[in-house]
Amino acid sequence: RKEVEQDPGPFNVPEGATVAFNCTYSNSASQSFFWYRQDCRKEPKLLMSVYSSGNEDGRFTAQLNRASQYISLLIRDSKLSDSATYLCVVNAARGTGTASKLTFGTGTRLQVTL
Amino acid sequence: NAGVTQTPKFQVLKTGQSMTLQCAQDMNHEYMSWYRQDPGMGLRLIHYSVGAGITDQGEVPNGYNVSRSTTEDFPLRLLSAAPSQTSVYFCASSRRTGGYEQYFGPGTRLTVT
Image 1: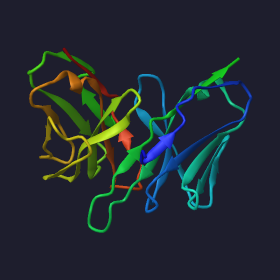
Image 2: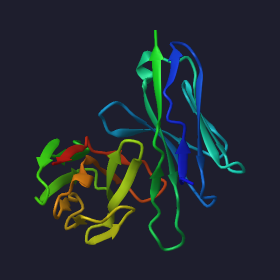
Image 3: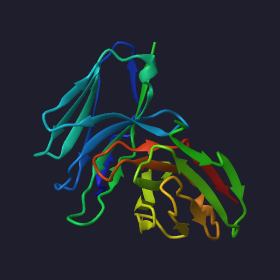
């Protein structure tokens, strides 16, 4: 089983729609969770961190479910400019005294259309 | 601030050639890392460094060397290029390891023929 799994999509949605992505992780000791956005042929950029209580940033809402080991990203009122690949990123901490590392999912592609 | 810079942007190598991918950051970040991104594989960690003089292997280190003589620079060396190393390479930096935002460079697209 992959450490971090995402549906690759593509998710094709009309402008103004609400769309949600899920991401599952296998390491129950994971400490930190993030969503990154990657535009075509560009570098990944942090979209938002995911906190235990859930958090919102404008049209974007992130949730964490530790019991089921998944995180989600909800995008409301989709814009054409939201078209990108969304990467789920998990800090798969390896224990005391060792440097933790981030594990990236393969990404979910979103295409917003007119 | 330039952030994280990488050179070159594109490179074509023949099998067996060696080269160095350059990475520099001007944010005084302690943590720097190299990833490769391949279709359907996600970003995979090659090597990382938690500070000047300290490096360690990531998930896919074979065929690559790194060094960290300064806080700013973290070059990646391909010792003897192979077609399997055709990929997009990203350098990243962050204040610390783990739960901190990583800032990525624009990437180097490498083709090995």
